[in-house]
Image 1 (cartoon, rainbow, N blue to C red):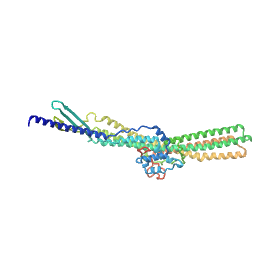
Image 2 (cartoon, rainbow, N blue to C red):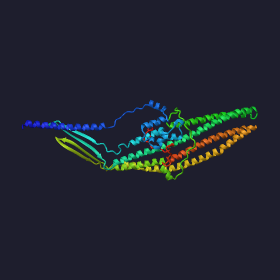
Image 3 (tube, rainbow, N blue to C red):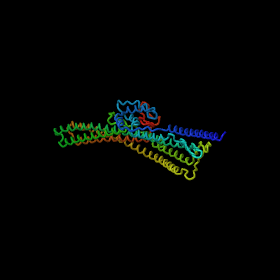
Length: 497
């Protein structure tokens, strides 16, 4: 073979090799593009305040429940058998009562809805927690322009192999943080329900007080009308008649003030329920105050308390973070593989990387995690002490409020009623004393106020005791056909829980 032919053959071979190398590079680039195509995209969701205002004004309990059904029941209160059945059995034709509102508030309370979304943010941190680090694709190249116009390149893939088990501990730490968020959400839901129970009892007591005060004002108006006849008959003086008329005006003003307080309490309930004040929803006043949980030993109370459940979850999360940081001081193994060409020689590339824990050893993160665990332990101990003190204080307030209510209803009210009957006897005999009339009116007004205060304080203490004790156990939970009192877990907004 001539020299010219041999040169031509080598040139053609170099061209084929260059073409193969270029094809490999293009394949690597195409694979990288395919990986990028699998990445998440960003669909914008701009805020629409106008649509939100329209939805708020048209919001009703029925529309919220329908939206929850349409969004799916998984992970929502509707997913709970008792709660879901209780919600679907709601009959709002006769109004919304306290038991129904306690379940409805899980869907509608702005505070609970925000907390649910915040819990979802923490729960989203579990996605791919502990996953291997993404591999790194590296491409190096160089063109030798003279004398042979060669292309030298290297394509490598580097990744970290978590041989220390840190990925598993990363997942456990993320799960523990999500457990904390769920515990905090469950505690907030239960606290919101108990706060709503106390507010509902307060509104009911204020509404009953305002209604009774209105009846009293009408009765005083009748007395003032008769007082004018008594004055003309010479039974009382003109000054006494004016005092009775002034008392009638004062009772009307007091009745209006109590009505305004009841209206304000009703608006507060609607706000807590996330419902518009202009919706026309009928709220049914509460009858008897629910009985508080029975007195139990401190260890039993600690096992059911939502506040202690949060403290325990926080301590478990601190332990998980400490275990993760301790494991991180041990290095993971870095591996690299590749393919390249140099001087027209194809080569298989490989590499190994092992960080040496000599100076850093993750000491700072471990120290912080140790301090966080110590804080979580102290927080748990403090929460237990606060639980015992709060339970004792609430129990004492409940006992005093119950005793006060019994005194008012069993002693004061009958005495005032008897005094009113005696005044009628005096009126018929013509020996009416205006001072006694005014004192009887004062006693009746004070009795109404004391009865309302006792009912409000009794309901508040009962709700506080229930909030401290936590939701009832399954054996104590109500049947499906009754409004449930247990706090369901949530992960979706109530249009979706």
